[in-house]
Picture 1 (cartoon, rainbow, N blue to C red):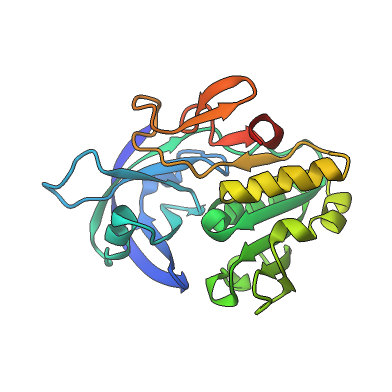
Picture 2: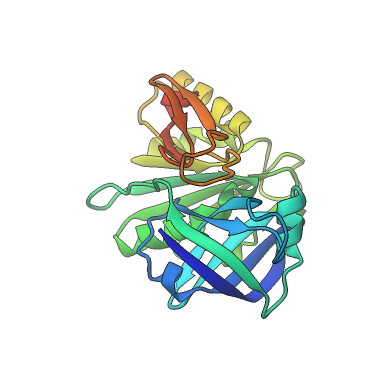
Length: 254
């Protein structure tokens, strides 16, 4: 694990309530993370609460810098949204267990709900370099809450689903899985728990042809299994999202 005092390079709104922050963080950028791993961000000023940290998935990593995509949902993310170019932010990571890509080439289906899109760009970029075909399904309540298509690699087939029908298909993303699941050889997902529950039900109704890997969005106050604040109840007992996850087998949890 690496601790780094990173410098904010940019912190811009990318959709309604969502932001992408780029940090000058050469050590974390070179750490060799896998898509789905996360970093902890100390979301307080110098002299503030030293324990007030929040977990954010790697969104992208390039030479010398990393990006985190997040939605403002509380005190910590509101603090992060207020950071400006040149501000210093304490980060540590990479932490957790990320997604596993299959050997050889395959048809990968990436499903994201809301801010669950954050690690999927990273996953798509790595998958493409390894010769996989990638389709991404993005679900949101309305068009203004969608990450623009320009954030995805151009080689990715991008399917949009909005609950109000303001863009793309109408409904919930799990209602439109059938044809894409039939095409795919592996499914990955990140989003809220209700989305995972609906996905598990839909796949069971379809004959459960594959075992999806999901990235869970539990609150992870410490990031390394000390506080037990991110317990997940699985078919194999209690697991910690930060230490045993955040990657899980969908059917182990839902």
